[in-house]
Length: 142
Image (cartoon, rainbow, N blue to C red):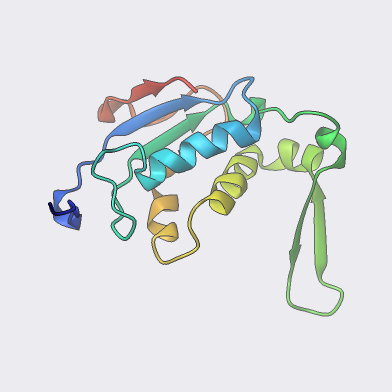
């Protein structure tokens, strides 16, 4: 018996719509990462990018549990001396709410050359409007 290995030319991609309103950030992003990676398909192959497109709406209405709303901090370093930059969750939610979801999904995907193409298939919008009606999105209940 031989194992099935999908080829990049055989991949069919679907479009999914995910509403983030009232959802917990981590639980939402794990499901999005599974869709982007293609692990929900029976033809999943680890070295082939076989995932789907995901459109996330209402990114500003995502929630955290416990005291994380006031304690969570996003950090990055510029590369210069004293270049550690910190942004709290509350500030990030006001300035760039879509980056909260993008950052969480980015950390959940596999750390290899397939991560960048997967992230290009993730579309995040603030509010309920998006510009992908022509793709006939399938609503995904998470």
